[in-house]
Length: 421
Picture 1 (cartoon, rainbow, N blue to C red):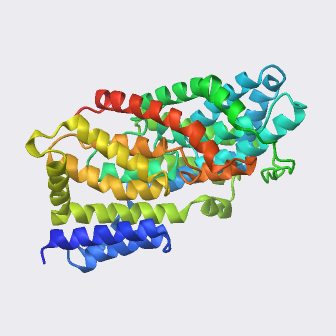
Picture 2 (tube, rainbow, N blue to C red):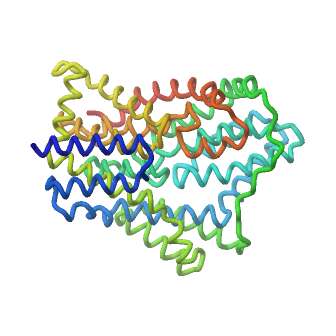
């Protein structure tokens, strides 16, 4: 049996295990990496080589720094300062402000942590407004915007970080803020949607009372006032370091972690606990699998088959780009964004390399497409978190479908402009 055939069998088995969801994604990704090495497709060392690459180290370090923002209460303090006075004036304006804030901040920290932070903030604001503001009208935008904004940078959601690692390992040159222009436009449109049509849909469709049971507040330790301030300063210095390019992103982020640990802003135990090891293992394993697909020639076989399916030599590049984005968007409605990217990104990479074009032409629509999958509560952990607001499945469909259609159209129009073939 040819190596390309073996690699395709491994890919199919991996996809089935991912969709089955009985085996943890981290285990599945490592099994895929091991299978690529044990079958001779790639050297044995490649099964674990990616645990030490720049992107994995950078992602682990940014998890620590961003979790520090959450643990010290920096995010909650900023959100309280911004929104409490606004709650006394206009619910619609508050919905727009919280939507934009959530979308922007989730581009730099774990979206689940942002959603978990904003839920008690929204409930608290609603309770203090004495009926002027309904928590349910704040929580739906929080759940959706905390995934829509994730491609703003490569330090946001785990799915974006993982996809970025795979693309860059294949030579795609996806920068820290490469997707920011498109994401900012999508955030602006989404904010406008929640302030207009989305707000009207929520008011009309949410025909249930706000749950009377109070949501538990985020567990914030009593910390000195200087700690959240220092954490914010270090965070912005990290972003400045990324932009300046003075060192690679791993060195910059590790230096920032060292500053926080040396100043006792975070403890070493907290730093280790902050790392989502499941995500880091998935990133390393899936990147190794993608390398195996390329080394075996399976990527070219898959790309050729997809090319023939789309019309062979007469295939339209824009049509294929749209198809890749829609596949990622559809899969992500029913599985995690991380899993959807793990399935589709290797195919997008193979297709781009086989056609000798910029791989970002196909990969970016997949990454952003999975991020704007918001029409079911299964689409993201953030939508699951805000289910505490009493939402039903149909509520996500009613609010999410119009917004998804708008965002998909904008993405497909803008992506080729920023990432031409």
